[in-house]
Length: 185
Image (cartoon, rainbow, N blue to C red):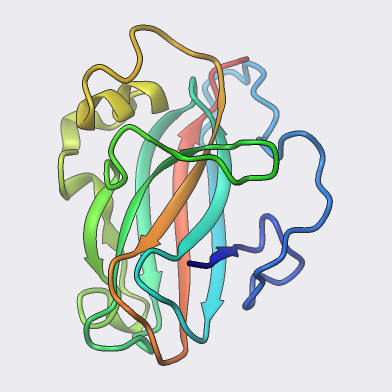
């Protein structure tokens, strides 16, 4: 099983399977910023992938509030290519285990025809999340999928991860974006 990294962890986001030396966390500064909406985006180009491979996209704080989460692709993936989106512990080297449900953000997103030709797929209308979950803190979203994960704000860094649920044998490109409000450390 392989782990691939977006351009937030590597120089280009293209077929990078090794992680460069990073500071302790690559989470953005989480100071209170007057309610500004930030947009984080990650680009990944994959030539092959196996069921269970991870795409580590970026790091967020458990206190950040997510307002939207979109996935775009070029339609270059195999017919059966799907992804689950969820949160993983950051770990020592962005290698932590899943936190809560592996697919809390989205389950089985079709990255072939459903979001072909760079059309967006909004993930807040999928799986266990809906429009009423917009603006919740990351730790609260994790609890939507696995209610007993956190009793209170844990104040931790978490990686947003896409997990292949089917093998990929043709080249494809993904852009994933999230609109969020940092809420302080």
